Image 1: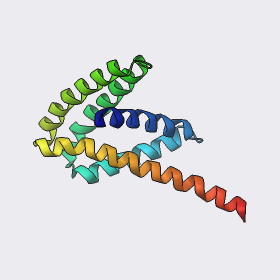
Image 2: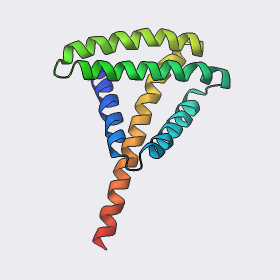
Image 3: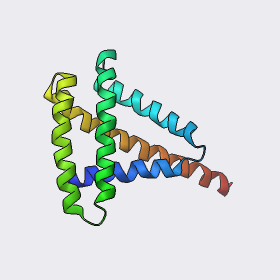
Length: 134
C-alpha cells in the first residue's frame, strides 16, 4: 500500500508543480536545479556518480509517469508496472551508487523532495492569502 501511495504521490505532485508554473521553462529550469541540488546533497553524490545517476533517474521517472498515464483507471496494472520499474531501477542505482543502502536512499530522497515541494507550495499559497487580508 505504501508503494501505491508513494508512486501516486510522485506522479500527482510532479504534475501539479508542472501545471502551477506560470513562467514557462524558466521556472521549470529552477525546479530542476533545486531537484538536482536536493538529490545531490541527500545522496552525497560525487561528480562521477551524478554524471551516471541523472540519466538513469530521469529515465526511471519518465517511465513511471508513462505507466501512470497509460493505466489511468487501472490502479492494479499501474502498481504492478511501478513496482517492476522500481525493482529494475533499484539495481541500476546500486550499480551507480555502489551500495543497496544508498540505492534505497534514492526513493527516500524522492519522498523527502516531494514533501519539501509540497510545503513550499503550501507556504506560497498562504503568503498571497495573508496579503489579501491586510
